[in-house]
Length: 402
Image 1: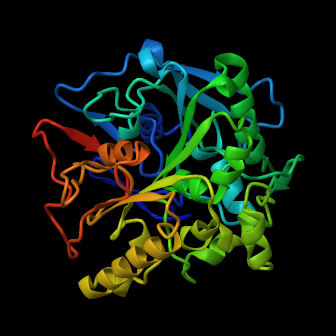
Image 2: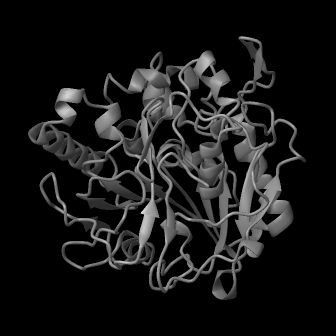
Image 3: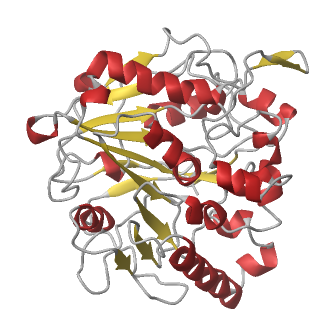
């Protein structure tokens, strides 16, 4: 979830710090693939294919404050549930970095991560969390699935109601209203408030959003709804190379309304720390299941020097620190669970890791945790582990961005 990084897409290297304009052919490829910063497009032999006719886009037009950086309306995609999943919702928050100053946000206005102006009326929901196979996704395979587009650059949290003029461009910092508009719209269209179960999920910036804002999301739904979080690749450490970059999110975009009030009190003056998983996890009350790599490729770019990132020993030390922090800050709460793998990955991968003991995949482990059949899963392998995320099917191909 770095503000600037090298992006690898199908063997091509791009600079996301110079985001693609909507006129670029590569931009349209990214839009077609419905990418988060680390989102995958998965094509599996034998896997049930999404029927694009069942996935529909809804613009948040009834919520005039719910707009992207460029002023285009917030937008989500919906796939209806069936059978026992009709009254259950999986709500996925897309990822895509963040902007660390006004100029950075202004630049994003003409890109996928700052606008929904060119979004398709239907897409394929590609992250493994949307898998329609009961074997691959035993808990949520037949639930209502929602994917909220990420276009505000501040983890869906900005609260400034008037645009800011930056270098001749009007920039809107209103991600909070996209969040609230989504839940209100789902309530009107699909009776979200009458649901029995809701899982809020996300990867990369979407995962950071889950750690930082899950309790606030829980408070927006009736107490009768069972609410849980599922965060992929969102547990970052509090490092001086990364944390201070988020200061603009809480100050420039005024993105504090969804943050934990106790965390804000304890970090007065450095409120951006409350966007960091190793800081905010200890304040969480709503049950959350973490899927996290010890050796996350994004964190090796954001939170390490180049020298450290190229050192096996240094990456190993970081991975050990992350595993310890997750254990002490998150898993000290008996309501929480985790699958910590040893893959070199960020978000979904070319193959799913399997628990060292049970052989369960992360989504199978999530279902077991949800049903009270275990809390901690994962792998305890040293870096690098070339076999930790092996592909189960030689025909399976996944395009992803690191």
